Length: 146
Image (cartoon, rainbow, N blue to C red; front, side):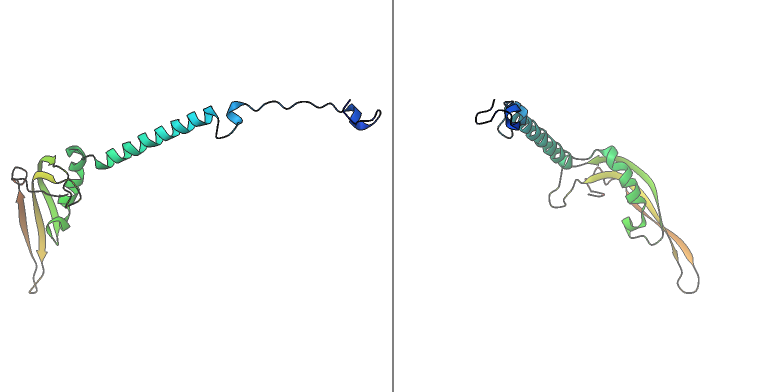
């Protein structure tokens, strides 16, 4: 019988069951398990930030740069060409050290491209070509792009 309950009343039939102590993981921020999880999460976050930082500051390889350089040198805008551009040679592609003043890595290569233009002045049209020879740019450390 509960203290103060009268015989025959509804309270006389109630049994008080003591509450179970909460499990350590359910106790909140102060538990050991929660602190271990927070430390693990912090460690994973630090590793992820370090990886992203390293990858964003790592120099690209010559292989990664070569396809983009091929597209760039084939575009008429690379040599102020108003016609079409033909890339005839692209060899010895290499990437230099990071250049802070240009915000990137210089790309060196031996290259040769030709601009094909059409002149439509004076009532007639004529076609001409102009070749840009950078075959020795790589050995002279003349950057093709950044």
